[in-house]
Each structure stands twice: as C-alpha cells, then as structure tokens.
Amino acid sequence: MNDLLVSIIIPTYSRPINLKRAIDSALAQSYPFIEIIVVDDNGEGTSCQVETEQVVAEYKNNANFHYLKHEMNKNGAAARNTGIQYAHGVYISFLDDDDELLPGKIAIQVEAMKRLGSEWGGCYCNLNLVGRKRRQLLNHGSGNMAEEMLLGTVRFNSTTLLIRREVCMELGGFDENFRRHQDWEFMLRFFRVYKIFLPTEKCLVNKYSSISTQSNLPDGEAYIRIKTLFLETFKTDIAVLPSASVIYHKHWMSVASVLLSEGKCKLFFHYFKLACSFRGLNREDLKDLLINFGYYLLKKK
Image 1 (cartoon, rainbow, N blue to C red):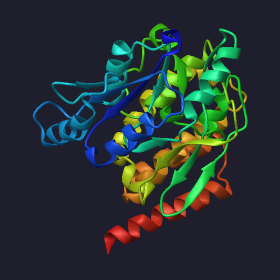
Image 2: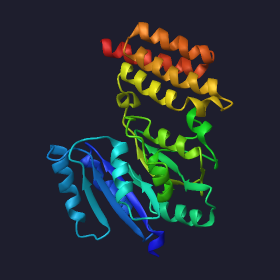
Image 3: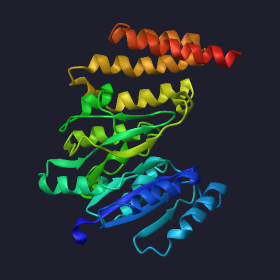
Image 4: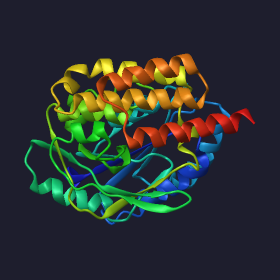
C-alpha cells in the first residue's frame, strides 16, 4: 500500500503555539498511510525556531514524522517546495500551521483520486472558518475553477488540497517570488493543465481566522506591488476569461480599499479610478470602502 502514501506538508513560521494542533490533526487521520513533514521556515537559531523544535520533539520517535529546517527564513512557498522535494508520497496534502484537518479529510480525497483519470490533478474540500463565530465556506464545483477562484465565488486554500506529487513536480512547485497569493499562483498554473475535484460538500478542514482580516494585510504600497506582480504574471490567463473586467475591478478595488484605510488619498483615488475603469462601483464595493474608511478614522483617534 506504500504506493498510496500521502505526504502531509506543514510549513511553519512564527506560530509554534498553533503547530501542535496542526500536527495532531494530521496524526488523527483515519487514513493510515501518511507521512508528516514539518518545514521550519523561522531561520536556524531564532527564538521561534528553538520553540518550534521543542514542540516537535515529542514526535521524534514516530518513524513517519520528519522535521526539516531552513537555515534562514525564505517564505511559505519555499517551505512548501522543500517539503515537496523531500516527500515520498504519491499524493501531497498541504497543512498550514494554524489550520486543522478533520479526521476523514485524507481518506475521502484519496478514495476520490483512485477513481479519477489523469486529467484530474487533485481534490479540494470545503472548510469551516473559525473565528469569533464559526461559519462554513461551501463550494459546489469541480473542473477548471480558475475563473471562480479569481472572482472569489469559490474559496479554498492550500490546506484544502490533495495534489498528485507528480503534478507538483511537473509545475515546479510554488513560485518563490510570490510573498502573497501563493495558493492562487500555484493553482492558476495548475488549471492550465489539470482539473480539480470536490468529492464531498462536507467541511473537512478548520481554518482559524484572525479577529481582523485587516490586520493580515500588508501596507498599501506593498499591496500595490503584490497585485501588480500577480496580475501581470497571469494577464494572458485572465484575458481569455469572460469575466476578465470584473476580476481586474475586484483586485484593484481591494488595493484602493487598503489605501483608503491608511488615509493615502492620492494613491487611493488613482487605484479607485483604475478599478472603476473596468467596471462601475457596486454595493459590495461601497460597503467595503465604508468599512476601510472606518478603520482609518479609528486609527486617527
């Protein structure tokens, strides 16, 4: 049964407090043929790396548990790539260090993959978003989900995925130039060749969210660089989609909203006008802008 081994890759950085929960959820899988690969991206000798090593020490006698560490901090994409290169499994399951797999996640996805043809490069699953409140993020589609992903009508992250390792290798892993949008970057290249399958509408992952999504965003000018790199890299992929103008509007409006929350008025108006050049303002945009203007007013007090 070793040919059905699943490698669960857990990249970790600066969050050793959450890591044990992630590892334990991997060990609690009902599917028995797994290996767990923790990739420590803190940088050797840092306080978080030392603390992470203490967390993983209790698992060192498990033959299927592997702890790898980077000499210096790289990024999440690099950590996932280190895990992919080390992995022995036919399938790769990614697990962010602050997320949690529910016990049947791997088994359900492996059973689905065994029945699918080679055009299906992997599976994904629905998730519970756990914060102040708990809510389900439910998707319903299978196939080439690139357009839905870019529009935000289908939402999944790397933890929801189970991908054939040979597909990860064929794609060259994650692009380490991307500090953010790493999941999107990888999946857009994936969708050029492969389809993805949703085997059940049950939620198989718990994603723990911060109290404020705003606190998880970079500063506005960094966000401009992030979006510019992403949209320029995938402009040919986006151009052929029926909703290309809506996608550009959505992404540039998100930049404008962050700039508004920082009170950077000149830049805000530039990117607001850029977003509106693709599509007019709608109710969702207005709500988001008002929320971000509220953040700005709160920070001024």
